Length: 64
Image 1: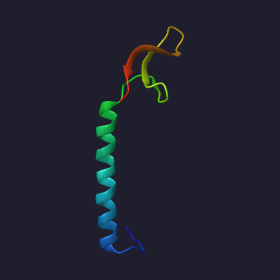
Image 2: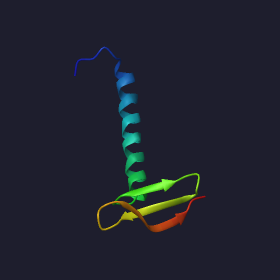
Image 3: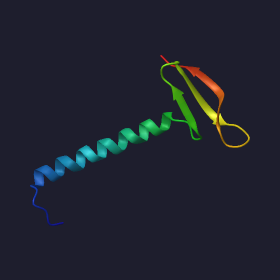
Image 4: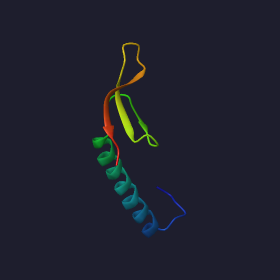
């Protein structure tokens, strides 16, 4: 690849990108697979949907 950036800069950018990708994998491991939402002021989260596909408070968890 021809670039105007130095090899050292490109190496550091690749390491940072790999770290970011690993962080996204960890984050997605904690998120639900289906639809979900959060009410931050109310301190609750909902996961699941009703019969017509709207987000429903099927499982509510208190947020810290």
